[in-house]
Length: 237
Image 1 (cartoon, rainbow, N blue to C red):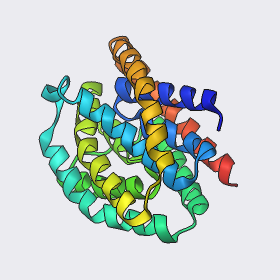
Image 2: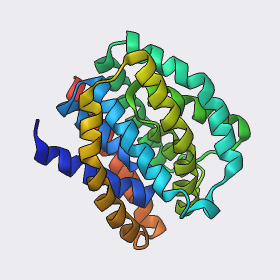
Image 3: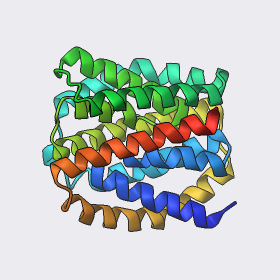
Image 4: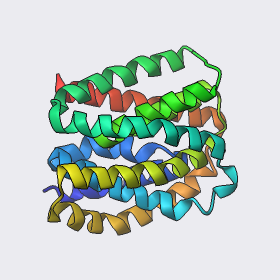
């Protein structure tokens, strides 16, 4: 176990999650998979991501779009069981390879200024895809981020609404993961080790959020998506 790498992963991912509303799972999961077996990496990610959402939701409650959260939740109900089925029976390497292609393709569309109108039916669909990705690989963020970016959602609304949805999706996904895939002491010990690191990252992320202007926020979003997609692609080819 490379403790130094673990510290860097958790702090960096916590900064991103707090400052953007999506960064923890997108950044942490691929690198945690280098240190732990898939079940352990996903469950550590779920526990720490849930903690961040619980701590910060009260501070940004006024920016939450509860109508969208409700539709995301409804959609995720169908995606969650599909995701755990994929995790239990599919080849995880091939799943990550598919996710990398999806992230890269949609990121290119966003860079080319592809836009879409927000609709209730699309909210439900995005929630379903997010639910599937959460229980399968612990990464609910990509479809939410891509959707919100494509509809030109303000960064305050994006961060608050995704964090509110994460309160549900991470908790339910963790319960489903533990119930059907099992858990072990490694998950809970290293989650405990990660708690103070998350605290440090959350403090830094709050400061960073105040400094990010909309243009920089969008560029930052694209860079994170491209990095994650290319990393997953290179790791699984």
